Amino acid sequence: MTSEIKKFIFGLSKLTLVLSLIYFLFFTFVDKKLFLPVFVFIIMFLYGFTILIHYYLLKSTTVRLARFSVFFMLSTTLKLVIYLVFLVIYLILYKENAINFVIFFLLNYFIFTFYEIKSILKFIKSSEPK
Image (cartoon, rainbow, N blue to C red; front, side, top):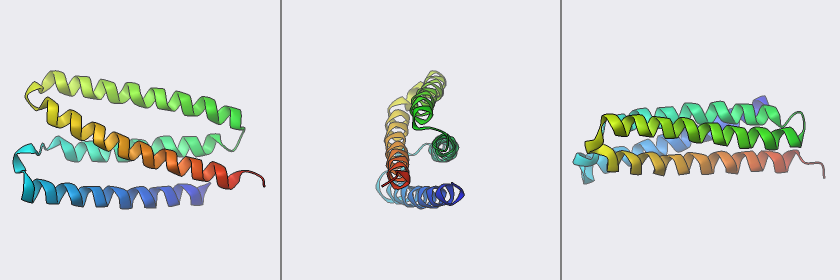
């Protein structure tokens, strides 16, 4: 499992760096007005939270697949609730930036979630007895 989490962190770090570079170029050369300083925090927040959840998902696969299924559903629900609370608090405090914030957050949420699910499915498939 240790090598799996290291591979995941390395891959997620590469993804995060590529996304950060794309955002930097976009907000520097295309449209500076759309940039919000909170965007940097969103990337770091999703990066850290994704690693944490993925670690526990990998840990849950060592016991039983049934336990993994329950943990996966619980972790997904917990993530959605935490993210929703974060979104609502920000939107209450900063209504004027709501559209930019929601679009940026959801775009990154889907990218990070897709990467996490792809990685966990690859891990489960590779650990199945043949």
